[in-house]
Length: 137
Image 1: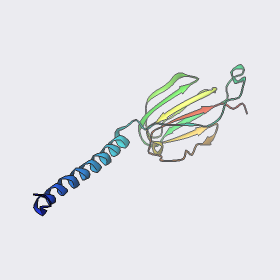
Image 2 (image 1 turned 30 degrees about the vertical axis):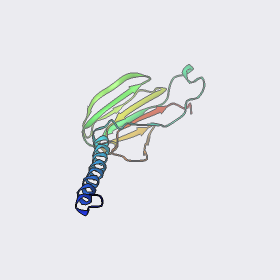
Image 3 (image 1 turned 180 degrees about the horizontal axis):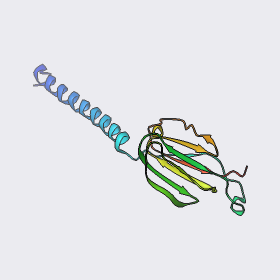
Image 4 (image 1 turned 45 degrees about the vertical axis):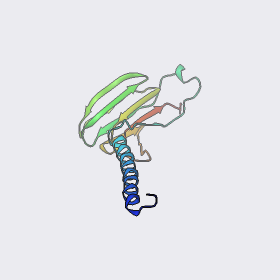
């Protein structure tokens, strides 16, 4: 029978429950994506100059551990350091044209570029790939 209030109430509950489950599912997927996902942001510090390959690079990066974490450093495209950096330990690169540093959590390390501490913007606990390019100055 059409318009029977007894039949409309369970149908409304089923539809409402389905919408609620859908919204909860989306929220859970977003949370898991942020916690587990590979959340590396690229941040380029300096722009390269034309002809930079003709002279020796002058960019130097020092990464000092505040807490233990995995760090990966590349110098001019070649691996320089990949492993655990413990609190108090540091890695300093030789002068180069391009240096990239991958850190899962910026609060656990201090990054120094040519003697000045780097203060990245945004969520510091998000993983980052910092790229430093010699600007020739």
